[in-house]
Image (cartoon, rainbow, N blue to C red; front, top):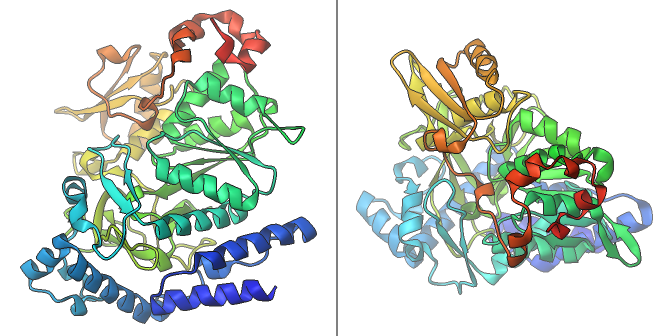
Length: 503
């Protein structure tokens, strides 16, 4: 199709010369994919939008040019970066890949405390997005209307290619309602490709399961959701409730479950795939760097598309590049034309990864920059006897146990002879199993203590599933504790399908 080729050409030229992308061109490509698949069953080749064709050396002059443009814009239009450049004695024209390390990182505290000081005064802001605040005080990021339309079109491409969605499909969004910007872009993307979005929020898991299993009447046909988008902790709630209520894969029509915003463990993934009969995929994204995102390959690496920004892995202090094999923090510089409102140079995300050797990937996305999957936050690392223990180390250990409860509640305490792990669970024997596996993995656990109630535990970190949304109808629902002990629910098919009718 000629117009698709022209649209892709305009897209490539915009990236090279630093001009605003024509959102209409991406929308044209989306429409052509939909039409092509409707007629021929194929979706065409969109490698131009994946950014996988250029080598590091080929990209360097383009990245240098984009960094200089961003630095000039930030210096001229934001009070924070004008002051920062003047303070360190650096001119915007000096910024490139080789000199970027001279510029101090931007801490998330800066974005949280003075968000307007990072806003481009030459752009009209359209929406102020707030982060969830589960790992720290919420941050604010401003977006323009152009950025919203661009992210919407890019989401449509992802839904078509990565999720294989098409006209008539239904997607269910179990996301906190404060994530309006992302939900808005999902809804707009769904409209572009003829997909029906259902945004439930973080409601009681029994209600979400009922919607996933019951379907929706659309155009005279019963359509069940084929894609679920949520957080790992809320997926854990769905798994707990689904197993308790006797659901099986035959009850659902899901093809894929996408989890982001939190660590997804192999233990939770296996149980969710067994319950729902769908593939569970881990993604990486942050409101602060949208539309940039990370993609997990089959080798378990986290890959980033370089055309959307510059990604660095710095040491835990944020003062130098991490060495291969070393723990480090993902640091992002989103670039124009993907970002134009809240400008960020070297945002120190706090997300800890392990830097990988560039020549040792051997996966289908080896041409893209990569790290390990996210291991946790830099403020949640524990050490004993020279061994650093990350939240992922603990979560993988706990959630691999057959008696694991979701979402996991755990706390580590440092003792004289090792780390003391407190977990929430129902099986006291899980303590010995978890400690044994931990020692096999060289995690220095001195004791594992299983608590039947959270009230007896040391303080635990919040999870996104804690951002539960209530309604007046919830006052008539049975409590979770009652549902757990009501054996009749396991055989009451009507109530299993429609828990909102419980009195």
